[in-house]
View 1 (cartoon, rainbow, N blue to C red):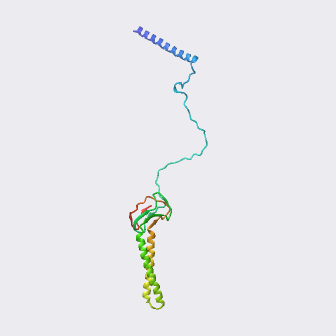
View 2: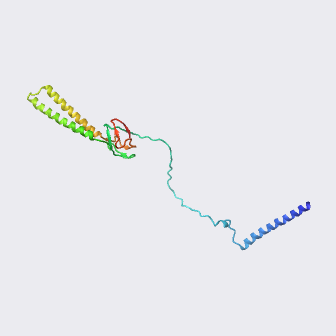
Length: 198
């Protein structure tokens, strides 16, 4: 068994020596007759590299945070008169100035009320002026003159109130700012004092 082992080791040694001689011969041939050794030869050449010029510039860092914002001023829009919304004069997110139109409430009822109040005022004024002439002639009692004067003042107040209600049918922005989503649409009824956040 030892002779078989010796024979095997002897043959393996010859094979290894033969391989070493082949490798040395290959490199010697390449060195003498071949191209110079290039470690990147099998990879298609050197990799392209992009370069940029170094330049001095200001660096402005940016920071991102999560949080909750709330407006400094916020207004709840409350119509002063009742009626049906006839028009919306803004779009959600639009910037408005104080006094800009926001909503129009149908003014027909308030126009009629103003016309009636002005007609009553005209009659009360005429009655008061006739009473003034009659008082100058001592032809009217003080109680009658007081009644005409009171009726005239009441008619003036009613006309002023009717005029104000007609003006209030146009809802305006109380402050300048960005308006939110309207909580009413055209055709919706609104009542006096009901608030809508804007």
